[in-house]
Length: 367
Image (cartoon, rainbow, N blue to C red; front, side):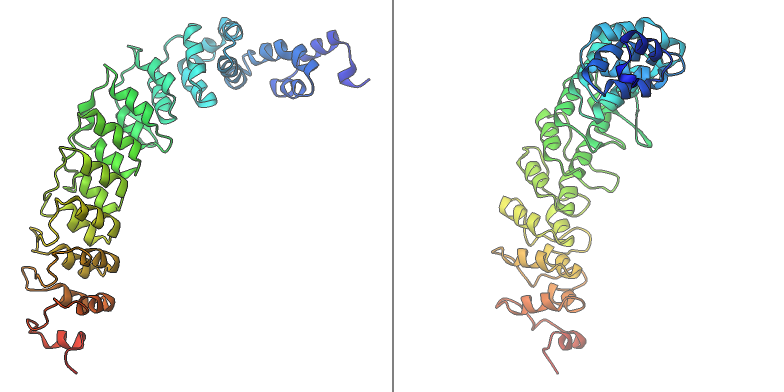
């Protein structure tokens, strides 16, 4: 007789000796098996030899479905304590279900605090589980301002919220508004959360930080760059636009250069147009390092698109030299023929001041 045609009593008797994977396969056969063997699957999952995997899986699935009776039944066996799983139960369930509902149900069913619950909070932040984050933040036994594991690093919780690929602006907002979070810990030293938000190119995260208003948007990173200069260098126009709209942003020099110098140097033509349209940047301003204008830096870098964007701006002086006496035309002649053509096509270009014979040959003034 086929197994599925056996009397229910016999199937139940056999099921007491089956492994959870085999029972799970039977349950998937049809509705009758699912109803008949559900309790047997839970019992076998709670066996000591299976609990660490199947017991945790069962409790997580039941919690996600808000089946409190099953959750309490599994917890009532005490297997989570006997196997040591209780220390990591919340963490395991978050990893298995990625569900805030599952966390809420476990807590409502009386799951005891575990020594790895800070890591559970960190994972909830990583995966954007806002409900779980709110619940765990209220747990006084969790050090919400300690360093949390994020990949191979240990970083503050707010940095986890910004750094992780599945980051959520909503979770970041929850963290910023929570009474227990030390916001200033990430506004200094190695963390610099505004810089990190800029580097993610995620405008929603940056908007949340700027709207909160408690972070210094002009602080310099170890490379002595402000968030605006970092955004300009990366060519991240949305971030540049948000920072320019922020009332307290510094558009002046940082370590001898402005965002316009950096954008020119790195060939970010879109950012150049955005900065010049803003009106607070001088297209002819020399940097404090070598006295280079944005045009000279772009020409020296061979950044054709950046030179084109700068030449579109009225009032640009194409002949300004640096402290060494080099002009945009001279530096372009060494590496960028297309830029030389663009400059020579302008009526205001000055070639009379050229005193170097080899340069005159390079740009075609003499044979």
